[in-house]
Image (tube, rainbow, N blue to C red; front, side, top):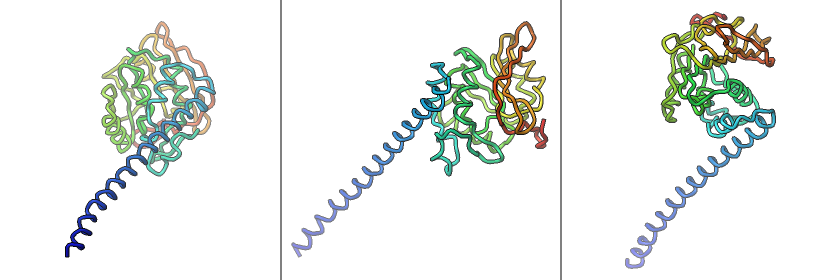
Length: 247
């Protein structure tokens, strides 16, 4: 009996050791995964963004800080730092990292700027903008995406982002005017409400054109007039109204 009791006394510590070992392995695995995402994110910035000419320090810093893998569906997490847009459901996508960085840089944001984003999507672009600008107002036409993005951004601690479910073509008159406007879906023509809600000296970046045949257009408002410049060919999802009809 004494021998059996001795054996039973040895089993308890052994179970404890195995349990602690299990949690240690989990902790190490989690740390490695986090480190892996950080390495991939830094590589993304170096190879996909800086190498293509985006050099603004505040943009580089934001792209390195915002964790893109948190803004994609679980099945696409392993592709989060690839040089490509990814599906986020409901016919929408999260933009290619380079396009996010390029569109952010061309706006020449200042810390005091108020920014309007049309097409919240996953919330990734809004997070990048919020790392630079004072306040970001973002509108999403798909309720499920807008609600999901709003919850995630709040969870991540972004207090300078306000999300609205609605028609981005109309802008957000209650918070106008804006120092910068960024549009991540494509209307056939530039929406008049957005032109009106752009502040004097404000900048807008927007894809314009028919489906699959679009130009990224940069605009600056000077003395009440918009100066336009085409910057590159792009392919964005179309801008639609609440009935799903293309603008």
